[in-house]
Image (cartoon, rainbow, N blue to C red; front, side, top):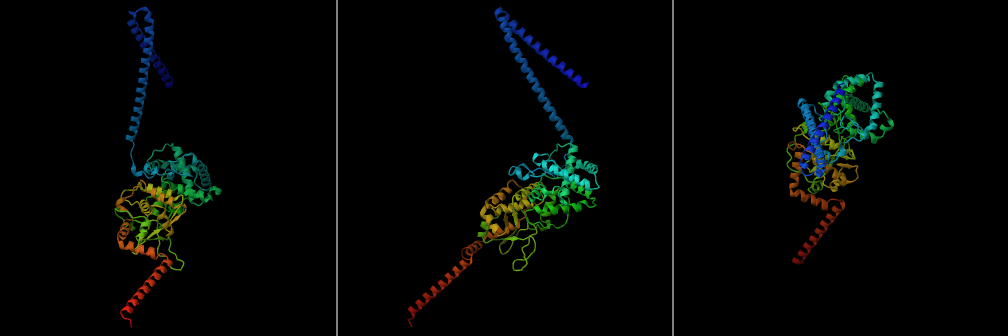
Amino acid sequence: MAFLEKEKGKGKGKGKRKESKVDAVTQIVDYFARITRGKGKGKEKEGKVDAARLGSQIVDDVACNTRDKAENSSEIRLEEDHLLRLSKASLDTNGWSIFKVPYRLRKVNEKAYEPRIISIGPYHHGKPHLNMMEIIKESCFRIIIGGSTTNAEQLKRAMKYMEEDVRKCYPEACDLESDEFVRMMILDGCFIVYLFQKNSPIKDIFNMNSILTEIWCDLLLLENQLPFFVLSKLYGMINKSNDEMGEFAPLALDNLLKAMPGPTISSGKVPKNIKHLLGLVYDSWIPHPTGNQGQGTLSKFIRCAAELEEAGIEFEKKVKDIGQDNNGKDEKCVASSLFDIEFTDDAKLKVPTIDIDNNTELILRNFVAYEQFVPHQNSTYVCDYVVFMDNLIDSGKDVQLLRHSGVIVNWLGDDEALAQMFNRLRDFAYSTQHSFYYKKIYDDVDNHCQKKWNRWKAKLKKDYFNSPWSLIKVVAAAVLLLLTMAQAIFSVLSYVNPN
């Protein structure tokens, strides 16, 4: 009934507007008719026609202006309503933990932040190229429900109870309705738990290493995350665990650390305040805070690898585990993590080996993006490492030098492409300049390069002692010089004293 009354009101309104329009035309026609009446009857009819045409145009303009004002007024009211809702909403930044990549980083390489196989969380949910994995997620869920005492309704109630807290983890507004959001939490979370437990819902697909590798990488994207408390809760409900956090965190690390590009030696301790899978791997990967005695404000940069070699600095790789070389001697150059770089008194720069493949840039970029949101007093270890490698690598020549020393394993095949990758990684990435992790190494390397004797010694070694043949040539030249000097001395002595 109310709807019908509104329609009647609308009809009356339209009738009134039409009547007012006709009245206005009539008045204008009469006005111009009176003006032209004294000018002759022949022109009276023509004047009325022109007046009517002019009057109609004026009324149409007035109507258009009225409509524009009404539309503007409606837009203003909508903006006011939106601002009113914002003023009533609380801004809880402490709950934010899953951010979107800053625009300045995204524009350098957008593909590095987009999932290729699977979407986790709301940011990339529903994208067409990821729909295939939605079917596999549903398959995982059916298998879990079929093999567990926990039913679907229990999972739904638990996730529904956590929905508000989960939404607070995402600073960007999520348009998903409540039921769809809860469904996404359950399917995404159950898939991750099932996958980490070494299960493969579709063996023909999951036995392909390329698919699994891309899934691991997708799970390490900044925007492709679920809060860790959701995953641990689902794990606990599925497996009836009393220590869901203590059991699920090591299980996740065991799977995800395989995707890291360098040495990863976990302490075995579960990090505190885990935000999501990316944060878990990050906290387990970075150096322990007690090892940061050498950090400080970054005030200078080191030269590229080729120039450092000219200054007498040698590059040596650090191995992951203590082992033995070909002669049965214990290896002493041991790396605890990718960030464990050392400069020794005998001018050796020891760097852990990093494997560079098609996924390395993606992984490093997402860790760099994650560090853009850490508290300002914390160190940015990945950004500092990227700065260090960017300083070492200017061109393919530097990559070749590091490759020959075992610091880099280049699966890309192109040294110039690898050099460009590291040079771009640093673009628009902010690091904490007051607590640069390699400050002491930078100072020691710079002090070594400032000494001219080190350069002269390195040049002498490179030009005359860089191979056995060069050494033989130097020895032969020295012997020849000595024989020549001896001959000259005997010639002088025989001239002075013929006897």
